[in-house]
Image 1 (cartoon, rainbow, N blue to C red):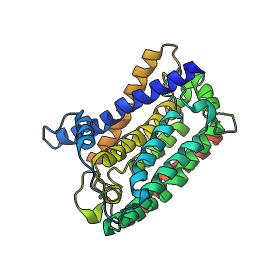
Image 2: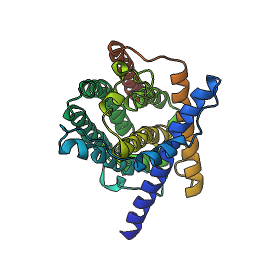
Image 3: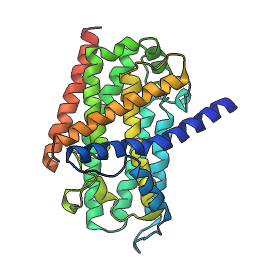
Image 4: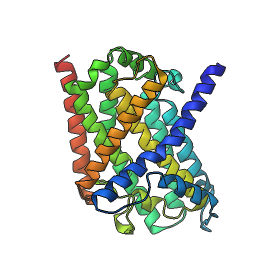
Length: 312
């Protein structure tokens, strides 16, 4: 029991340490392609430290929801990453959970953030909340199809994480099947939408009318904003970890924890580069074009589902 708790704490610390790095990589990629020097890849760490040092500015109309929401969002993201082992030896909470719980944890954090956006009485906060819920509702069907397909393909008839991981540990060749390639493409689109990245959203925009996630957290400052930013970094890492260890299980069980962790970092870095490439080659969609993006992700996930059983 004590060993499991220590492994869980170690996994949480590792994910807290590496999560902001991948956002820094995307920013650096975009800067270099645009012929700018850009900030360092560790700039997100400096930003978090700066935010923790700043004072809070709280609206007079805000209630307890506004103050509680950043912590719920952060804790739900940490709990979600704890449900997915990053290497075969670090099981986290996965022994007690399944993939659907991860979705529900994100829903809990999102609901509190949406309520907090409405709580201050800000017009942009309410607009951001409604848009955030719309985007999540559009992409969640594709996410559920991916989860169901992975569970069915693993021949466990369950979304139980340990059972799926044990199957994948002995069947790493499934990474390059047509089903997994299609599911990975769909999951990449889901990752972009859920992480509020271009073309669904632009996390660096300053135009309030085009914001989605940023409009929802516009009233936050100080440590509250730091917890929200950190929660977003971890949430992004959850989807990357899902892709790296479930859809691309190469090197997940090689018998050496350090080697497995190195392979995991390489896979997540490759996914990060793919996200950066998408951002560099697209522009932010109009709000009315986002449903088309979600439908394409859903169709690709359904094709992956059908392909998995046709070619089984």
